[in-house]
Image (tube, rainbow, N blue to C red; front, side, top):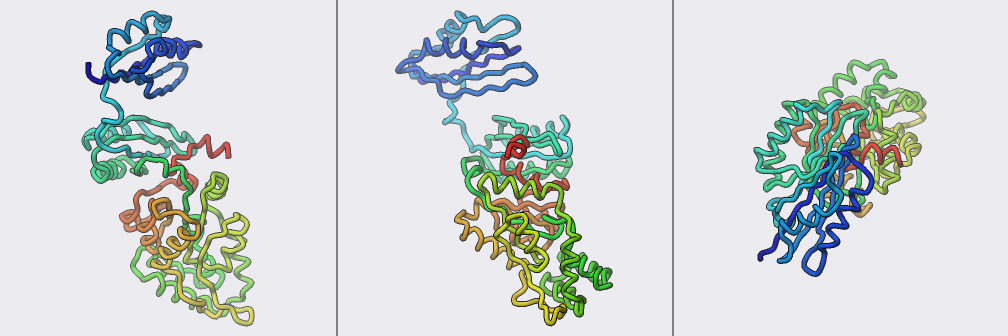
Amino acid sequence: MSHSTFLVTVSGPDRMGVGAELFRALHALEGDDVRLMDVAQITIRGTLVLCAEVSSEAALTHESLMASLQETSIEGDGMSFHVEEVVPKDEVDGRRLLVTLLAPQITARQLESVFDAIAASGATCERIVHLASYPVDCYELIVIGPSHPLLRASMTLVAKENGLDLAVQRAGLHRRAKHLVVMDADSTLLQDEVIDLLGEASGRAEEVSAITRSAMDGEIDFAEALRRRVELLAGLPASVLDDVRAKLRLAPGARTLVRTLQRLGYVPAVVSGGFVEVLAPLLAELDVTYFEANQLEIKDGVLTGRVVGEILDRAGKARALRHFAAEVGVPLEQTVAVGDGANDIDMLSVAGLGIAFNAKALVQEHADTALSVPYLDAVLYFLGISREEIETV
């Protein structure tokens, strides 16, 4: 008799002792030739689904397995079992991928579109985990499919059409290995644009903001835009930097993101086109030790309208991410970059996972996934960290 693998599924109203009955029956069959290969269980609102995979080279048949189970007290009071022969797990074609879905509320209509796209890609869903129900709804799907690029393309289209934030990643233990998470500061870690606040202090807010918008949209080279804006600040007293720092507002969920990363052994970092003088005290408060930013020239207590040294631009941010990864000791595949502007594009492209955070379409096109919710700690869900884990740490 050829090699056989059977899946036993027990389902119905949960009650004490069901698991013991199932494994007692399987133990009676277990021997040199019969092995328990896998077990999974879920209970939703008092309804149990318990599955066991059993494999045999010769001795086990559908009939003998059914007979052993029928001798138990599993059946009754709405509880039943089902036995079917299946393809062994290690013979399943394709590779395991993780599909993370996120939205303020995920509906059955959205899930219908997702599962239609999975099927159209020649893939199947093996498992669903509800990572969070607030402040956003988030599910993680383990999908077995023959083509990562095909599934990702299909999922990206579904996400755009159905208002979902979605990521497709390779499954594996690397998800729980140490990661480096590099964030932009302005309009990502922060709700504000520091240069715009400095523009307000100089009385030239409209001019500064106009240049900022052009730079964010990729219409002006970032370095040139920064020089132009800093020139408009010439003559401001350095004490203005303290005033601006006091006005800074962290993005919702920013403290939670940084704290959770640190307590789980991940490394948060900040790479900003903003200014060390404003950011350093705030990052010290958050205990973020890895960061790079531009430096304003100050003479005799006054801003000169110039930047000290080479400007940290789009290419500089990518270099900083690589440098931090080498210093922390993680491969680029285990880096995450989060940003919103055109000067973040290179950094998002270099990282193992690039996340466009409430970004323009141009930036989203260069990222692996996008977040359109205002909560920065939603980044944690793309690392497979559940809301329950976030609250626990």
